[in-house]
Length: 115
Length: 113
Image (cartoon, rainbow over all chains, first blue to last red; front, side, top):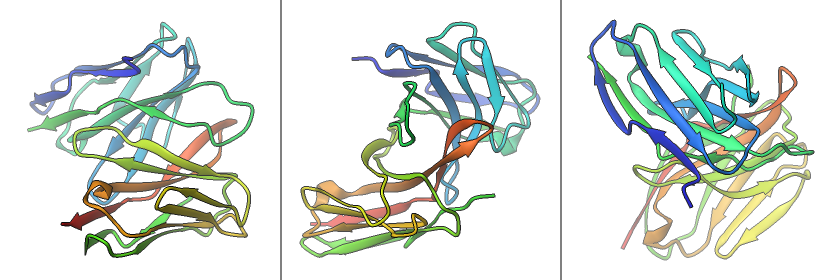
């Protein structure tokens, strides 16, 4: 019953360092998403993918890159971390749905601090 | 930009009391979801409402979608400490041809024994 797994769960970076967050799902879902959650701002969409080999920008994509080389994995990269990227990052997935309202399945989150 | 405003942002009440959380927007959504999030975990779906005016009940929780599909409410009857958590509403819309969920900022609910 793994569902959506994020690694690492915690990370501290210095300004300018790079890192990659890994999201893995074992539910054969088509759609995958990366969100960031900041106090008082809810969840904001960074990037998403509608299938293997495809990615698209969300609401707040600047400073992040993503890749989806395999259907089950969605990677979020920070090339040059900035303090404004201190946040909790959530990966989510959902199956291809014919109608709106498909349930998102979330990982447990990755807490990133940029000093 | 589509926005979902939740109110109140914080609510602390005693066990056994009733409460209502509101989720409002000027935009129309095709459906609206409510999630609950506990510390250190990701949000978990409680319910999806699709039809304007729809009411769904989940034990002591009652969810309503506004007639115009722009707003929703969550009512909890006889709140219990186990209801404590962050409640998020999310409206579904199309973004670049794919479904996108717009999240409210959340209501942090604390039920005191």
